[in-house]
Image (cartoon, rainbow, N blue to C red; front, side, top):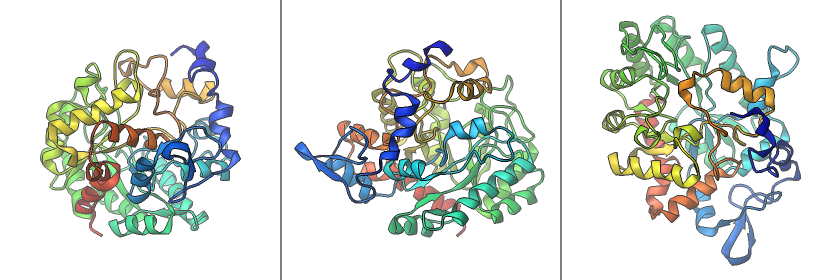
Length: 397
């Protein structure tokens, strides 16, 4: 992306100050309360200008909403904290908490890609600390019963997950991390590991014998297998090897994204559905379309495509971003983020998709699903019902 175009990435007015800082003005409404404005449209956040139809607000307030890949904290803080022992890059202050409350999401899956055991232990400990520090706000989700409870309590739920499995040095490590709270693990990120290949690796030999043992143990303890970043052969092997549904928490249809390697083939999407899994559609621009413009309407095309291919029962949301999106990150953080990926990721002038790039983006998505003719029951499944069902089949508690 062009470093010099920073101020224009969100159209100038949507700067870091206005988007990441605007929520200090407070909420007009959160949860089941919304401020009514003219013509049956509602504000869900006082400091913003966006309004949504009464139908959209009611659908989100009534149903469980799960984002199967989204951070609780601010990605910019995480990336700029570096190795400082004095700054907690994952802290959620009151201003950021308002963003989470205004988002309409009940449960987040704040997984990131990590290295080995030590970094995984530290990350799981920090996620567990959210509920320990603020039990009035956060609840760790370990079971379907927790999902029901977090909705009733009006708290913010989160599922402990990691976007690879390098911390599983032996099958018994799966048991250890399960007891520490981890409930989802990707098999690989973008590169080769002892388990299998990532989506941008040069060669994909599929799941190794060691990887098969890890999948078997994950099935036994009730930890969900996620193949979002896995290479094609590794992805397909996981569906064959797992006795439980396999998830694609955040990816899109390759057929609509110019053949992007991080997206999934029709074959993989069909195998996902056959396993009983669910695919969360992401708002990352280069995973949606390989040309401009790239808007929320093109993101909705992926929902339509997967629904037609395998049924709405296998669709969900996996935004793959923090509350604000990527394009107003501090410049150093933005460049650091991009530098971690190969050229095959095909980053363009923006990372966010137009119209799906702010804290209330799930409301815009729901408006789009209504506009596309999805029924209320279909939208209920997409917002969270499908992932709740699949996780209920995978988890042992």
